[in-house]
Length: 253
Image 1: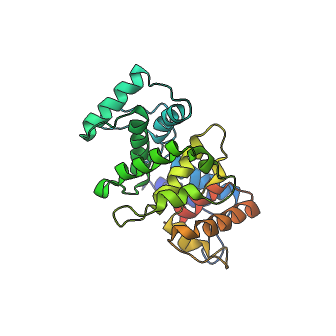
Image 2: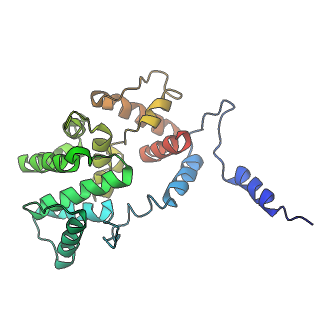
Image 3: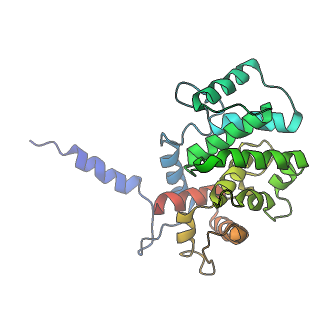
């Protein structure tokens, strides 16, 4: 007799592991759907290392954004020095990338953090030395003394997103700027992870299904409009801002 177990197993997917949607195919925003999206993303090999603080550089892997973020916070906040282990990791990655080291440890770590976030999120900064230019921008803001004040965003102006989004070589870095700010808050010990939400064109294109007043735009000057709409939607449905972002992005992509 023919074995049809795979058909039965496939039926279980639709019963237990499918998103709950309206009759019009619009995904419901609720904790269970968010949990399902998180499960899909966590088990995706492209993302599962990103939040691992011990995902050190090894072979062709250049280290996770969370690993470099930990060193970034340590150097930027207290001007401490790298351990021999971390310094060796920095040197090995720069050698593999075939680029010259910057003058300071903080510049090197910032560049590697920028590179990791860019690589993990496919924002393609590397065109025309975009990673270097963004690194220089961040270092200059740190030197001005306003970086961590801007990152905390207590005034709600999102000034750091605005500054990092400004064009480099005729290209806006809006999506990267929101991801950089979001992930730094996520990896921070004392800044709310919902201080920022990642801007993604897929999410923006579908946000109007839930917020009829939302007007999509890829202009970073409208980021507050995007954030406020996402925040209100997350609060209304009892989910986190990041969870909402992951659900809409994963379902509609």
